[in-house]
Amino acid sequence: MNFFEQVYSLVRKIPKGFVTTYGEIARALGTRDARRVGHALHANPSGSLTPCHRVVTIDGKLSESYAFGGSIEQYGKLIAEGVTFREDRQVDLKKHLFRFD
Image (cartoon, rainbow, N blue to C red; front, side):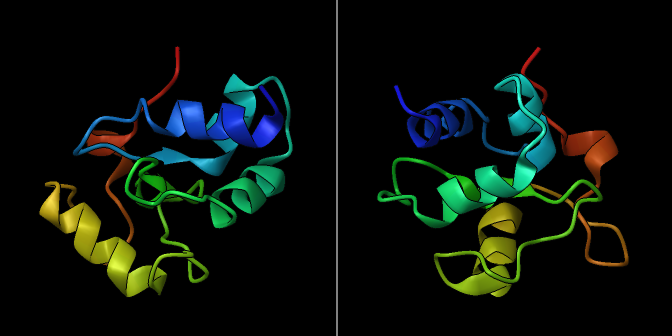
């Protein structure tokens, strides 16, 4: 399985109502290259199979370059799954962070 496929495999494990970070995925794959994780998600061939909307920045921010409709679409999908946000429109990571431990 190549790097991108490994990223997609991990992202498919994130349950509804939770998010993880680019860095957390990189850590789980034994690398520090969170940017490459972002490249993989941007190239995701199947948004319906791989819920890349559940991946946010280390501080809970949404991705302006979310490949399936931008941050507004990502926000709507997370809200629909029950993810809550702080006043600064960042995901409340204390409640919703999923780790691959």
